[in-house]
Length: 155
Image (spheres, rainbow, N blue to C red):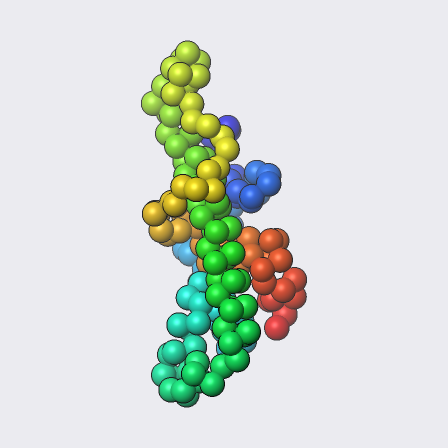
């Protein structure tokens, strides 16, 4: 890996891409409209998203069709599974960068190198924030995996 301050490493589930930094000193908060927030909340929280008394009536979940509840639960589980794999990839990237800084000889790197494959059975308990994953990265991952619609930002 290169050590260049003008590049920011962006990991996707299939490839690594080096793109120009925007300005990481000032994080840009992504703003979602009501429909986008509903779709994102459904994926991240599941059916409990609809139990928010400020957004929905108290009996909204009770009146919801059982097929709709199952669909929301299925999408939420799939989204969390994909997010877990993405977090593992980011963890592997950060660990590799740390190993490159700590061990300069190739022998140590080969001995201590991690398996580059993610493990679907492993549950990464680190938060996305700890791994430097932004909300926009999560949304782009969900769009790429077709969990969110392709026109999500135009809704």
